[in-house]
Amino acid sequence: MQIRCESKMKIDVLGGRNEIGGNKVLIEHKGTRILMDFGMSFNTTGMYFSEFLQPRKCDGLKDFFEMGLLPDIKGIYREDYVEHMGRPKEDRSVDALFLSHAHADHAQYIHFLRWDIPIYCTHATKLILQALEETGSGGFKDLVTVCETYKHYINKKGEWSRIDRKHGEYVHDRTFHIMDSCSGTNVGKVKIGSLEIECCLVDHSLPGACGFIIYSDEGNLAYSGDIRFHGYHGEYSHAFVEKVKAANPEWLLMEGTRIKDMHSIGELKVREEISKLVSNNQGLVFVEHPIRDLDRVKSIYDSARDNQRQFAVNLKLAYLIELLGDISPFAIDEVKILVPNKGWGLLCKDGCTDHQISKDYFKWEQDFIHRENAITVRDLVENPQHYVVSMNMWEIKHLIDIQPKGAIWIKSSCEPFTDDMELDEERKSNWLNRFGIPEYHAHASGHASGKEIHQIIRDVRPNHVIPIHTEHPELYQK
Ligand SMILES: [Zn+2]
Ligand SMILES: [Zn+2]
Image (cartoon, rainbow, N blue to C red; front, top):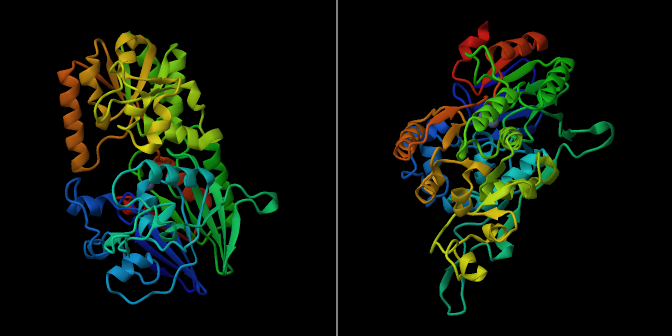
């Protein structure tokens, strides 16, 4: 969708139109070109690919262009991929990327962008991208740094060897500009060519989420990113709406994930629900939740404390909490770190040295496994009433070792919205049935209700509303 008004502002919604996520917006004004988000579309990806049928990397971007996962735009993609496809060298054609938050549907495809495109985002967003890169798996995780692919060198034996991350000269740091660390009168504002862009924090199910206001001499534009009002920082979203109102925007790019739902359940309510479920149960409590939703993580942590229990987090969450530092609602030594048995399974075996045990773990995991607050499934078996355990489908195998009695499972995440997720849900039910664990639900969405979205539009009164991140653009007409 391309929107050209009498003015020279051009707004090109390259992804996120008529679907939830995959946001990619190109804005052009008097020769200045900026991208807003560069996310993965779950819809398009799910149409053609699955866990075991992934796009190939062997011909650079070919699979992604062919199947409509990425728009073919010159001058934005990383040079190693472009060169490998046999395309002539391209000059950089965008000035910057503005990133609203680090959810995959907004940020995942940064992997494919040129490493010399400056990225503007919040401090928390950058740290989450760093955690995703350092603890993630799979071949598409160059988010904060980029290691050139398809390059080789001649080794000591005179043979052909592939370049990897050990070859520093082929590893590039992306340039990040942190927008919420400025001070003085210019907080969160930056000038790029003919545009001035302001970053405003918003409440969402991920720390560091923000919306943007773009000022130009031919009208202003506001981009909501993903927004809600019912988390622990609803005041951020209210302040954002006030700023947008004051900017009197010509265009409002407004997310509408839940435009059909008229009501929202607040995060405080979720905390109450979880706390009540924990207090009514004597056995282990497992909570399935989005791992990086720190509002939810705080709700679970508080619920555990309400009931004199310890919150046990997995290694990825432990890594993120430590990396986020003050941004996290609690420090890593205020929770327990559940270390899983991996590889040779030496963790709970007597007589194994720390060195032998460490060999089963990735480098980033090794730092956690011998800490004072590290626990194993053995602790959960011996004292189930002491813990609330962060859990997900990929770690459900712990149940085989725990053999829990009187445990409950709280699903504190959204309902499945893809076929793969439906299958996972069914598989999970099979596990829970097999081990006799009842499942309860306590969840609040990361998105504003239809009522709130309409209220924003009524308050802001932009000349043009551009629906994004929604399956129901027709409902904006009201
Ligand atoms: Zn989103
Ligand atoms: Zn989001």
